[in-house]
Length: 437
Image (cartoon, rainbow, N blue to C red; front, side):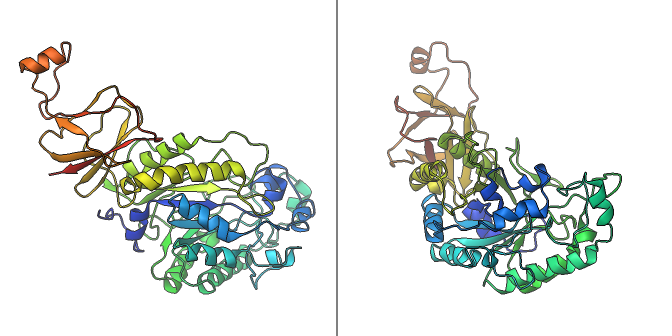
């Protein structure tokens, strides 16, 4: 498989091969159990939010368990929130006291996580928020938790974005020099197009995006940087990051396919929310992975650990369900991308060289018909167990075919027909592996 020819700077070959990663949203907001934006939505002051800092004590935290669950699910890389919008840092940063080492837990939680995932063979990515609701020099705007507190706004008018920018760059430098090789830098987010009347949103100039990108590439030459710095895709971004949205077609730039990654939680929320029970089923998650790869993309699937530092049972059930499917079908994902062939209804194709994978979202009775593949396939098998699938090219004028398919409509002459078992295989999405001539 070749890497799409978009204007990337980092080497994305491993990225488009591995296809499947773990996103982790974890921080003080987990204690509130109302999502990572709780400080904003509840209009909390720093004093209100302090109770979560004072009670951060993840006594069940064992990153080796997290890493094992990710590996067994078939994930090949992990991206963790080093700092979210609330400004809380998971590592022992020298630039702030607002960090895990100053909580009752008293320990760096990022470093053991990085070591655990690396030990399981996963690559490492750092999510880092460009927004910071705790830093005293981060200027207020419409996305600040206390933006509608007029007295507070008036009192804080003197905040200096240049001082915050220095802090932002310093922390990124720490992350890229203190943890060994970092494979992904996942910034979040820019909103310079927003105008609140009394304040503008922030983007490229506020973050010093060009200098930040240059520094990251100098410190980690092989790093992949996402597209949320507002510096212009052709200048810096290595991959696009659509969020919680299943793309209808393959993503392109100027008519050429690009490297992209869909990030999606296991339910509607990212950080831990105890009362959100709207979980996505294993079958739907497998379909989401297949659909994404069939359009040339990666899937970054999110888990929000509990305040005590564990993956909850619903997350574990889903990771293990995906892992059960991946153990028998991973070669239809790893190294695969979109195919030039058009699949039949309720199906998706992924392709790796001369191997074409037919993913059946709905199991048909008896046969499935594949336009464009007559005389193109030398062998077909059910991927789950390697059993042969018979192939045929039907002649609509032949007497045998007319007897067997009395009301069979005319099909394109280049259609290949697969003869399927009546019983659907025990898999969320059955896959037929087609060996092309």
